[in-house]
Length: 494
Image (cartoon, rainbow, N blue to C red; front, side, top):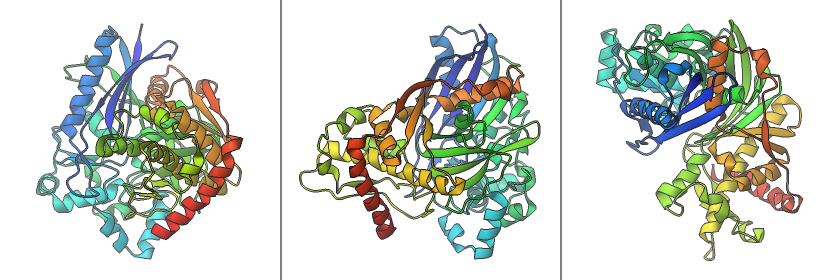
């Protein structure tokens, strides 16, 4: 049997996945968490050496567990946390910890810019000027890291998102490239042309020579070279940013087809094909992928915190030991009247779409002396769903139509209670696929297209539903009232 290997480098961990190259059936995955580094409040970093080690270890564990001869891997697909910035030298050595997309240290710079600058950035990139995106982090590194600044002076600086770093390491420095779904998230790319823009490079003072080449999302990016855990010569043939990879893995290839990924954050994307849809409701215009020089666009809503809120319950409050417990604990609330005043606002990293309030903080409001663990856990799940509903409602306005069906993916969608709450809050049908590791699966499909094994046309009918969730009529009145409280509380607090 031949295999495709997916490398899914996410915010909280690295996943390696195997897929049968003949029938594209998902075989197995290994996920390894890596450390979250918080130097100061609102600052988030990752150790790039640890990330690279997690890639190696995940691949080794996966192939060992499945008795896979690595010579049978015919192609590799990469998907990754997107806006996170890596700085490394031409030998592939990290110069500084990665600055994670959640990091807010550049908030002041963004707030100090003039309206004309903000308008220029939005017009050229389809994105707001926000610490979320890569360019402000690159600027900060150049101004605050002596090592990074010296590397620039010596022409030994490579900036990139995680995909570029992994590709560089996999090819032993032979390939320094990225593709549009990642590059369009840097604030350095003109959304209309797909190329780096001189006005943006000047704004952030980023030399173009320090940035990777932008190529198609599907095709040969390079081949493995000099690795201890994979043989030489395996082609890397597909790269997509994680949310675009999930869109691809869900086979949302036509105009209006959309998905929501419940990961560390939650991200709602709708394919708009060759149309650049400009949001008037706080959503992002982005690139879904590029094939044979032709760009497919997407409209995106970004909720910075989803699964990370559950992780906070586990790691900080220590009221659960595993994320999977939240369904059973949340179902202990049998009388929703006990929940009517409790709101969990999961804004640990500010508010993204559609409000864009960078300095917002998380909060739990409405607690009383009789509030229990089950109330906090259920409120957390509700807060995730209310945040996503804000994205859905904004997208309905921009698209000019009601959203009736939503494809979902990501580890959190295994939680049936979460899906039931989302279906009821948003009054739509939830479609959960057989393979919920859609981000990794999308990377494999990208690699298969890049290797010429399948075409985009072949992907159109591959979606397989595992279960559907519909709104609960008995709970709809409760959520209708609570949705008003959600909106009013956000206005009051932020």
